[in-house]
Amino acid sequence: MTHTQAMPPAVAIEPLGTAVPSTVPTHWYNLAADLPEPVPPHLNPGTGEPLTPADLAPLFPMALIEQEVTTERYVEIPQAVREIYAGWRPSPLVRASRLERALGTKARIYYKYEGVSPVGSHKPNTAVPQAYYNALEGTTRLTTETGAGQWGASLSFAAALLGLTCEVWQVRASYDAKPYRRMQMETYGSVCHSSPSELTDAGRAMREAYPDTTGSLGMAISEAVEAAVKDPGAHYALGSVLNHVMLHQSVIGQEALVQLAEAGEKGADVVFGCAGGGSNLAGLTFPFLGQNLREGTTTRLVACEPAACPSLTQGEYRYDAGDVAGLTPLMKMYTLGKDFVPPSIHAGGLRYHGMSPMVSHAVHLGLMDAIAVEQDDAFAAGLLFARAEGIIPAPESTHAVAGAVAHARTAADGEVIVIGLSGNGVLDLPAYSAYL
Ligand SMILES: Cc1ncc(COP(=O)(O)O)c(C=O)c1O
Image (cartoon, rainbow, N blue to C red):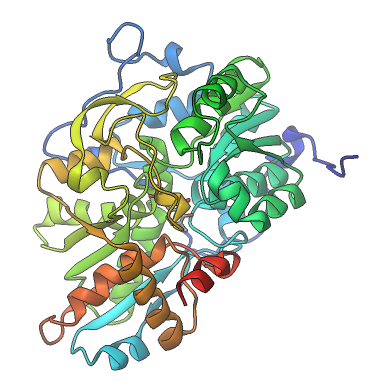
């Protein structure tokens, strides 16, 4: 029996007319406008030619396809989306005074906390507009993949609010290890499958080839894309990697710039974000990077990836598919190869073979640094943070904390450090428990 009572999309996308504080951004910021060289285009996997809007039409609504290629600096946020954002945005920028004391650092550390969203991470920042534009253009069903489950839960949340149904393929390792995320998705009315599944050609082929596989985001993407392509009423939604996702996440960094100024800071010296597909990192850092490029500020930006899945620090910068079956566009990115199956580390959301083309481009141009963090160091930093600040970071976010903590130990007096705390780890406690 299903308990889904979705409101028709046409009704659900209408703004309610509620007051939205002026501190909720009115526009998304697009780094493409400020980059010294354009981001290499995505290619059609069949022809090897740059993608056309028609290539993407079976997967995405036209508004998102336009956002994927736009070089406009600002894109207006629809009022219905701002109304939903206002439920938790602006997210807090908090001075980590107790962490500073615990470290004995003379640096000033701040964290931008995305765990205040209804599902506990930054992912709703893009789930809501993606569901919104789909509903606006008549899509009724969304399909997606999820690793740790934060993205699947976020799209489920957005689909519920905007009157869509949603079906999620969750990487097997996380599906087994994180039942609460599946329950969260089901509570919002979605259906969640363990990937690889028996439901798609791609899933069946992968189960046959690798019966004991722990799954990967690349496999789950193939399944969700295939399901969307086969259903004319369905579209696919991706929680990271693509340019329009980086765009939507820019609310994080735009708010952080304002909040730092309100806190009396001239800016940040260094910003750390964890990187799986690159979306929270881009969301936080691209507005700082844009300022560096336009105004000559020198904020250092650091991508923190897991040593077990080191696309930026060990991968090749080349065109590769976003999924195992090769159904997605080819993207120029740092990649470990589409068939790379990362070890089942606790930070399921960081187990992706590739990296956002925009983040990859920024790293390639030397505009952003990247470091790899060992899982033990990430959890040690997560515990330190939890015991000093009270918030238990998501396992993914502990990578950014670890980067910042290592830096803070030797930081100069008065240095300003910003951590992207992309999510809350309360549904990931077995991962902490395994480490304790
Ligand atoms: C809390 C959290 N942080 C980070 C990530 C990594 O994704 P991205 O690099 O797109 O921010 C995830 C992915 O699921 C996540 O759930």
